Every structure is written in C-alpha cells, then in structure tokens.
Image (tube, rainbow, N blue to C red; front, side, top):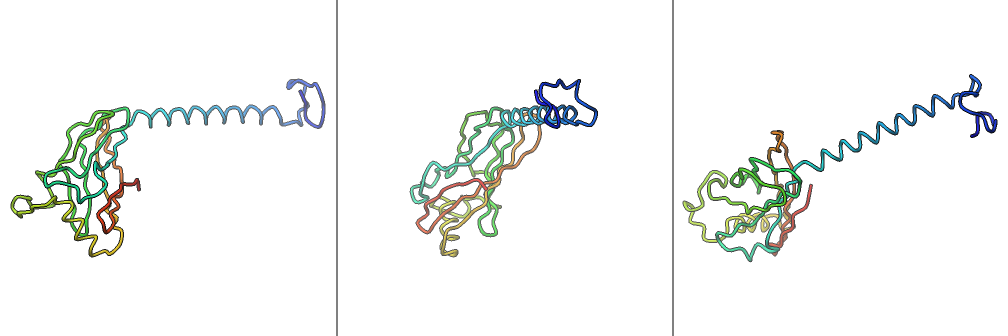
Length: 182
C-alpha cells in the first residue's frame, strides 16, 4: 500500500499526522454506501407502484364504431390502482371517462363514457357516430395540423396516495392517432 508523499508499504496506522488519506478514504466509502442504499430504496419503491398508461386499440379513429371504446387504460406496475379517472381536454371541453373502481396489476380495461362526457348525455344529442371521432375531427379541421390532446390520469395507489400521470394523444388530419408520455 502506498502512503502519502510517495512512502511505500506503510499501513494506515503508521501514516504521519499530516497525511489526510485515512479520513478521506473513510468518508468516501461512507458516501458510496449511503448512495447505494438510497438508490436501492428508491428503485424498490418505484417497482412496487402502479404504472398506469392509456393506449388505443385502433390506429385510426375512422375505424371506430359508435359504441366502441377509443381508449384502453392499463396497469403495468406491480401493485393495484384504485379510483382511476381518465380525462382529456379537447378545445374548451373536458371529457371525463367513467371511474374505474380498481385496476389490478398487468390488466387492461376499456374506458367507458356512458355516465359522464362533458356535461351532457350522448343519447340526448342524437350523435350517431363515435363521440370521440366527432369531437377530434372538428378540432383537427380547425387546427389544420397535428392536434395534441392532453390526457390526465388520476388514481390512488394501494397506500391511498393520490397520483397523477400525464400523456398526450396526437391526431393528424387523417385521424391517425398515437399516444405518448408527456
């Protein structure tokens, strides 16, 4: 082992008092251990949380039937999610899908909109096409470019902590859609 100032084969206890190798060496090991433990705790916490994401079963909104669900919510985490509510904002209107009471890990659920879409009932308006296709088509035609629709996903994890995830639904003039994380 090399000591300070070029001395060879010197043990730490034999180092002169002017050499600061021993305290620095001990502090750096303590910092490395603390960082390692912190990393493992954070990583374990992320592994056990629910990971909620929205996807679409179709690549084009023109292929949707009137009562077909345009979006699917899935839990790719290792714990359950409760009271899952997905909402999206198109122009000045917020569309909120029906609440999902519980979403188990590695499961998918189609989003329904029967009870609440904005502040009106679809049957009262007499809409014959899929409501999302109708709303997005008019917004895309006004935008004259790719439309970006923000999606908010609110849910409670198994510990009761409320969490929010955000995604963006992209739609072009041909009503092709894709969903990305924001």
